[in-house]
Image (cartoon, rainbow, N blue to C red):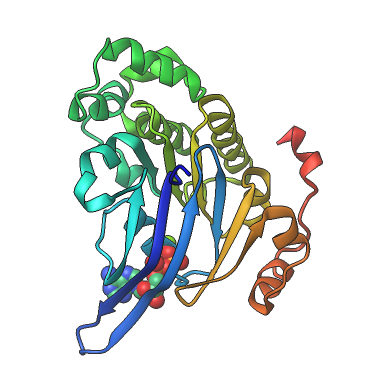
Length: 259
Ligand SMILES: Nc1ncnc2c1ncn2[C@@H]1O[C@H](COP(=O)(O)OP(=O)(O)O)[C@@H](O)[C@H]1O
Ligand SMILES: [Mg+2]
């Protein structure tokens, strides 16, 4: 049997606080992400979502447990991990370098990973794929809107054709209509590129438009996981019920055409 794209087992991260106490950021998390799958990680602020995202991409080291990408430990295969993944963060101002034009920002992973081919053409292609114009290549981040900047961040995260994209609250700094457009873009990238997407978000309304499966986190642990429709439609865990109840009314998936 082939290994999943990404596999975490017993993933645990303790943070040592200055006063000497230990904060359990993540506790014994098991997670598999299959190729081409869309998974949402939901939970309140402080539930461990960003800690999980960082550990999955080896941007941080676990206290215990392991992560494998395509069957190999991530630490030993950092280069393959970088080539096979992309990340999009909440704050596009912080993640895009204000000194560089969009063309240089998007082309950087191609240079860093020594991707063969015509980088100018690859950048032009990915701009179009994320819904930007060719002229945007010459812009600086401050010349773009928040939604356009997040499209640049996504373009940069997928330009090298990774198999996995992780978004950590990629829409939470955006207006509601722009949020929906960005989630629609992620869904399209999943469909057209076969890209697996892990979306960390506390916006259940959007999660439901993207993810086939939901993972619910609480106090550093996964408390519930399953197909999105069943977890959000018929939550089993009391914490998930509270999360779902806190959203006024989830729009039906079929009404998303206008978003
Ligand atoms: N660098 C850190 N040092 C100490 N505690 C941290 C650090 N990063 C996260 N934490 C703590 O770990 C828990 C999980 O944080 P985080 O993964 O950022 O949650 P989320 O992304 O769901 O808001 C929180 O209690 C947070 O305060
Ligand atoms: Mg977070």
